[in-house]
Image (cartoon, rainbow, N blue to C red; front, side, top):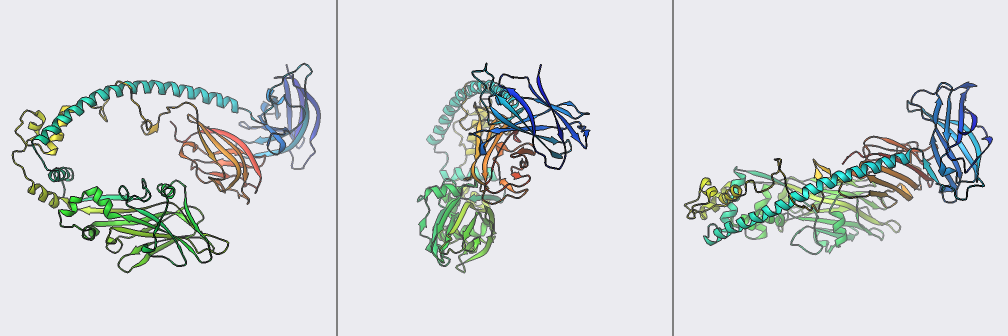
Length: 605
């Protein structure tokens, strides 16, 4: 049983005044208030192709909604596709409203075309005398959204149950592994004590023999990256690279940079994460400059050991630098950022030439967003100083009385490849520390003859034999018992296993995206489902059709395919699989927009 109102909506380009239906629905009409729409064009009933969607927008006054208007969107039921008859039944959440409701009808065709019928109508909702309490009025409603949320919650509960089973199984396996590991450590302690008691090898011979066994060839190439990850300001022990700032009216040389930046700026430049380190300077004619120094010698000493240099007669820093310079190839400096100054956006990058004592290899970018500048070197002899440092400078255009000079950096590094001929070096060390009566592999694995000398390789083979079937294998199927605490997360085949209840939230605001003036775009992830709510004010200039509102989404909220989200009756946003949110038909400056959608994540759990 329904209370029905039948209205005719004519599809035409001419503007018409809203149809005053005179219909009054009451708060007690729960599930029975039905609007029937007859669609006509040129006085003929409009046939609706299969796959057509007919959205009907109901708007009403609200003190709490944006711009004072609440919006409910219904997907009309197609009663008769041949005759163009559709209908909606009012949900309980709008029956709590008292007053005039404005309706409008739209058609979404299956071939991606759409139209506004230009049909407008009005009706009223009143409070039934019998109703003391009415459903709470929601400012925004999208029919079908609640069903999606319920399905999402069901899937989350199912995933959580499966994860609990997996975690219980893993916990039992880790307990067994801990017991076996304890036994192995005891055996290792016995073996190490035996080695020490018999003075089997010096440290130099052990290092040389291990390298010889591992490399087993005449030359080896190793590629390294030096950056500021883990750098502590003022500390040179763990990471000897430095980041310093300088402001002058002309470009400085490395010795002019005496002011090291603070820890917060080191943290910002340590990763490519859009967290910028910025040092502006004011005053007409001043240039903001930063010096990025990478201590190649200190890094290689940590990698190769001091003995690599001293055994070849290189005792001082300058001698050690001359030893490694010819071995370095394919080196280049990288910086990610942008510059700002009186002349506009520009960031310039150069490397210090220790032979000619000038900045060379200069390159620039004139973007207003973070971009990469790379300088290939391939001649370390001219660019690494006697202390082992390779210096790079990044600077912005000069400042004037109104615009500061600022170098905004996101990340920087120095990459190089070193080619080493290790065998000659290793063989000389082994010869100097030669010991006879060495154990063979079979003797080491048997662990029965205490008169044989064990090399590090034989020690490893002895341990490997004893520990076989006592460790968890990386590739074989096994059962591991006991509770295991995976403190840093758990993955299966490279995908995260959902191990927490609730949701993951990502917010985009004016602090993260320059096209958002105020408000928020919030993404919530439930399992593989993403819910996005748009409630933001556009920037102070228009965004053209195809322009970006959000340049880059986090990997966890990128959709599996492109989706469209309506934010007004004639504006929409597209969220695509590349991680961008773009304006489908442009956005107006300073205007507020709202909308919501749900979709599947691209990187499923």
